[in-house]
Length: 300
Image 1 (cartoon, helix red, strand yellow):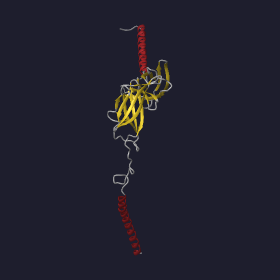
Image 2 (cartoon, helix red, strand yellow):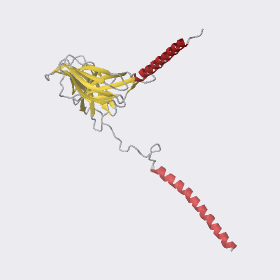
Image 3 (cartoon, one colour):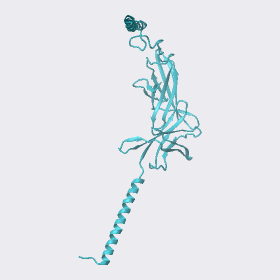
Image 4 (tube, one colour):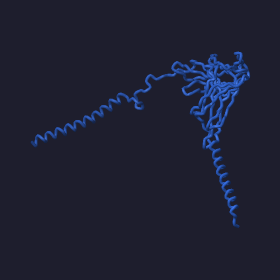
């Protein structure tokens, strides 16, 4: 069946419109795929060290192309606080290579009886969608005291909540970890170094024996509340002489066959042997030279 000229024009126009719509739809879909942002996960933590300095830490992670969850560096994190009075901006910072961004919590912002809500947000990032994490915490304090009863050495940790008026009330039923400060971190004092506070907010731990200290026996004891849903992370330290003094060898590298410095007798023996060998070489060369000179005189 042959198409008339008019029908051919209509048919070609329809094909042109369909092709245009298809190309536009493909370009739009690709544009959406390009513009689609990645999803990041923000986790929030609250720390208070032994000096009373409070720090907010945000950890940012996301899935890479292979679907593995990795830390994300270089993301700007904005920190806020939210109280009854409203929302306040604390500051902003970039995540480091480990995906962490931290900011000091100012002392001038009080924490009321219901605690305070801390907010960490990713806002208007070019690669990742907006995301946030919230955590509500109350201000707490740990105080360490040391005592000796008979042959036992006791570490007592008092956990208290700081109220808006400055008063403190005991915190019962909270786990306290006892450890010792070492070069690369905090080492637990034993496999069972966790004690739950009583109604007075006190946790008592029996200090084990044979804990090494420095040359004078000094050690740094550490008590901490870790990842608590209400109080976050709180730490207290105390210096004690309960450690066993570290015995430092006067000569850490004695002269021995298995040490960098060999025994003197061995060095003398090797020197005599090698000296004799080189003396023999020299004597042989001298004799050969002497024989050559004698031959020259005889031929002359």
